[in-house]
Image 1: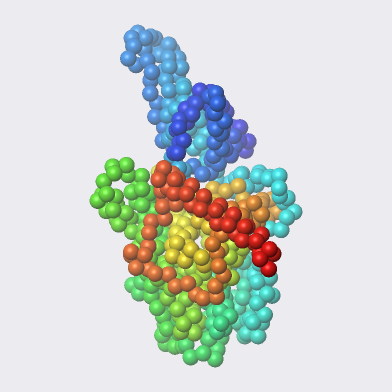
Image 2: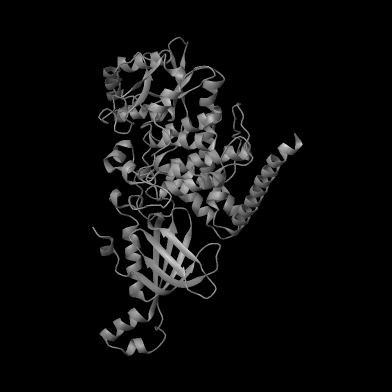
Length: 558
């Protein structure tokens, strides 16, 4: 399908653009297959806005007839009325973006306005992933022959020599037939063969059998993740599953299972074929229930929070009430406290842990990622953090295409959208704020990732799993976001100049007074936050310059 078929009006002159943090501008509006481009034509102005259409969450249009007050319209014939209506009207399109920006376009001519609106509505929601912009994006400083991605499970395993005695790399999923949402290689206990893994996969929802995601070098304990067991109402069991988990804690007295559902939710899951690990069959494992919201509840929480942030009433009581009713900070608190529990089990108590909820693709990945940030200093560098996200979210099968189809403004009926990845970034920001020297990346990186997950030039977050990306040829036909973020210019922008390496774990405070609204994201388009960002950037530049001066003075002092 040619994009031109969706574009009835390609460009319009004399359009007025109103956007946050800028005065209104008058100029030319152009629509392409993937972008909305506005060029300010007023003298002395060189303002341009290039908006990826995929970043548009919702549009609202209104048309105002400019001649309704005159007698021309009422005295004209039908055809004359139509001509007058089309030529003598103006339209306004309000564009609400997934990055929470709100733009307004005042377009002369009702026909042009309606044509532009239809084009935006169609091109911002293309169904075919192969038509999305990452397959057309060709930056001048990169080649499709460049390395794609930062690491792989095979490379990760080869670098972790400590694993080789008790753990092996399995390619049982090399054709994605055992588990569609897992990568082709996974790390499992050495005593489990591939036939055993296939049986265990049939006992776990979506085939997500327990796999290793973290090895703690200090004490040899591990974090495993999976989906729920399919015990059902008849309390079925799988001896291979029991043997696999027993092999994980071989030589240890017990392990923990952190279930991100409430006890009631886990028991109710039995009625639909799911379930939990029974004490009688998994006697060496202690189950801990920690309910974490997901799916529709989390998406509705985000919608309520954004509504609160856009409230212009300037009523503090009303604002605080809306903020509390959104429950977003409660979700942040629950995620951090559950991740803290996981890290405590491994770091302080010296026990291995299995984490799962229902599907194992959302809250499971959230708390395993946060726990690794808390415990492992190698995950806190810029490259280490991006590698962690690649391993625990992209390769591990978080369904980005489904979860990030819409943000907080969409009028579409909720389907499988859920801002789990955004919740992760908010939690990481809370860590960054509480430990400003311990993380090697800046808030700007988190903001960039939050934007890229919903609409990107790059192929990193396309699809829902590795199988889909392989079928689409993502590695062969798109560029990698994580590689781009590590190029020298971007690395300088996204590094934390105050970073100091520490081997210590960073234990977050989860008291309500310790958690704050992530203003940099949720209020990023307000003047107050913009001024704060400018001040932070100035401080950042001063720190960098001071560091350069300190380095240049070292030879002279010695």
